[in-house]
Length: 309
Image (cartoon, rainbow, N blue to C red):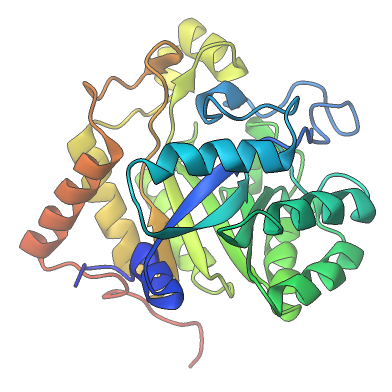
């Protein structure tokens, strides 16, 4: 048993075996890139950091999934797959367009469900009604880029939405019987350790299915990279040990019903400016975090308190 409510274990139990996410790039954009809200994007965003080699909007969804399945199938013989709509905002199109892409993914043999990454302000009730139907038959998760619970930080990083919009999106998703997940970045500029730990307290009151935590990384060809070169002190970049201790304390405050899916990010070396973790892999950090929590007798939710009397 891990000292947290492990999402990977949940998937194995739910599907009766190993489950692998297969990323696809469906050619979506987002409203703070296409000029609807902004044309600058979020200060940290460079989609090249998480697009696998087989992902390209020039290929069909089916082709991307089949190439991904062929790649992972060489490593693991018996497993099922989740189509992971990852690049940009994957609900930012007409309902008919979105449904066509999702249904194409679900028609690929071996695909057992959907994970759809999007922004909180790009999730219409009309689409949620349709996704409710899909969720009644297939595992469906909406992964919302919340990033922080502080509006001042959301403004600084050019997210162009509020935390209230994020909270509303979680509740609306949950009310339609669809799993809602949250993506959070630890170490955004201007946020103290106390601010970060308060994120855990605030998010614990939302009906979240799972959560992804990532350390802030400074990626080439982003606004954050320019800010970092001009004033490195703007950013608090953690050492691995500092980050492990922060993540452990975050988990201690987190509602034990919320399942952590991921604890760190791993960007290509040719794109990463900072921090330099000397090639530390995600699975290695995961092991170090587990050992630290066990040694320190920290478990997820051990300091969790509900807002109820």
